Length: 203
Image (tube, rainbow, N blue to C red; front, top):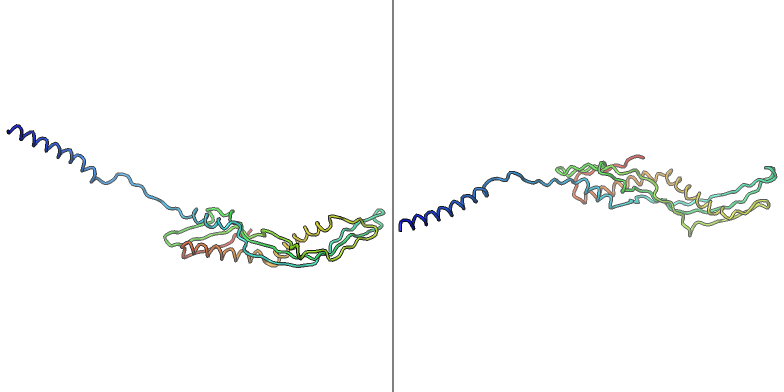
């Protein structure tokens, strides 16, 4: 009976030792741990880039263009003109191409919820003639002049360039910069930033 009791005690002790061998490891602190680091700048850059080409200013312009093709004959002794008077109306659109924005242009402080962004420079994105309001008012070809079939298309191409120059002179790029800054600032505040500073790089 005594030997049976000792065997039972030994089996019980063995079970206890097995449990003691396992449980201390569960109480030891982990020797390694992982920390997730969040870098918000790329996320902010992606959110701004989703605006793509931000058209932030549009000017409507009208003007009259006198286009002439001066032709000479008889070794320059005689001259003749093929000319037209073109009434021009069109729209010039300016803005910022946000696909050019890189991570270096965005500085984010998550602790203070502050963000600083420098946008790419504003530029003219398109100049379009209004075909419904652009027309040839008059056309005149002198007797000795050759009628040019491409004169009107050349005049329209020049008109787009002149509208772009006129809009730039009238300050469309400055207006586009201010409007783009305001739009991006509103976006960043909607993302949760309380301190926002947006500027536009000068080209």
